[in-house]
Image (cartoon, rainbow, N blue to C red):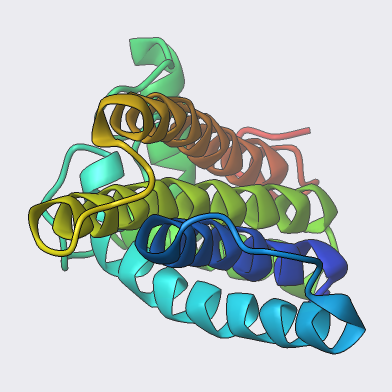
Length: 209
């Protein structure tokens, strides 16, 4: 079980933060003159991390929107599996739902899913889930950063003017946001599928081997 941030986790903060700083700084002041140097690079990396961390908080708030919900609520853990936009057949949905309720004392499937994830973590069987969770964080943060960057550029265009023309950068940021949201949804679905199948194949799972 991972108990510390990995390099990928740091990049999930730094890259979106750098995207936001790029739009804010270059949009306001134009392209910089000269190289930032070692000290400047370290400072920019640190600033990107901080901005990216704040962006992650905004991404957590917006997250339900990526799955068709309202911002500020709780994202549906069963989206793509037992919930909306499920890729399972009716028989698969019934079998996995029954497995969760039988295994976890007749709790609702959503609560059972969270217990299933916890059980896999405690058994040390969550390796693929850690990787997918990192992808979820990165795609969520980057999709959010493109939206923030677009908002900043629109604000600059309406006030002081922008060095990143909206006619060019508007489509660029919008077209970047779409695939990141799609990838986010894909990894969210795969995460849920991995939890359900991981519990199902345990020796003591209902209906398992």
